[in-house]
Length: 264
Ligand code: AMP
Ligand code: MG
Image (cartoon, rainbow, N blue to C red):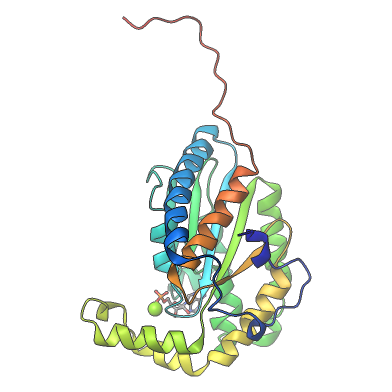
């Protein structure tokens, strides 16, 4: 697989209806094997990043409810050293967060040198749920695409690698996954009644996603649209993409000249 096939080129207008969430390449058993190899390599790359204490990696995960953000995090970070890696989930903003500008709560969570940061939802909610539910007037949210582009450009200029993934599932797949959350006692804790109301607004969300992705996929902070109906393929695409981008940095352990010290 060439991860770039899922990259949204800057300026391209996205139409989610034209992208097949069921798409896979290769057979499941082989891809799963390759997945474990990628997972091990990702762990090495994360250590190199940490040791180098220079670059920073931000991974943004977005998607409709049940699209597999949590599962993707488990897979991608499975081999990571907890030291040097963090995940933060962005839910409904607190009063303190609402009292600030919408980028305040995300800015303070940005990765520091050597760190990998995973955002489970992100500042994009401020042009998604906020737009769909009209939580702020259009005159406010419509300015946010440019603001987000400028914000991410600044982060990229300052050494942050930014990769943004939209986990693309079909409406039917969401139906099945929500039903499974209701039927399976082990999954019931994940079920929220509000998810059913959000599901009613599927088309509005897709429209908001199309606009957000089309307007904010840039060279420094690209979007990838990941076919996510098949979990094994979704994991593969996200893992392989991150690995490929990190390989491109040609990370090396820092060269440290030590005289011939003998530890006694
Ligand atoms: P979950 O991902 O299931 O934990 O749900 C988090 C919820 O928080 C989702 O319904 C999001 O739409 C909501 N959320 C996240 N960010 C915002 C925001 N900026 N404004 C309003 N709701 C948000
Ligand atoms: Mg939820």
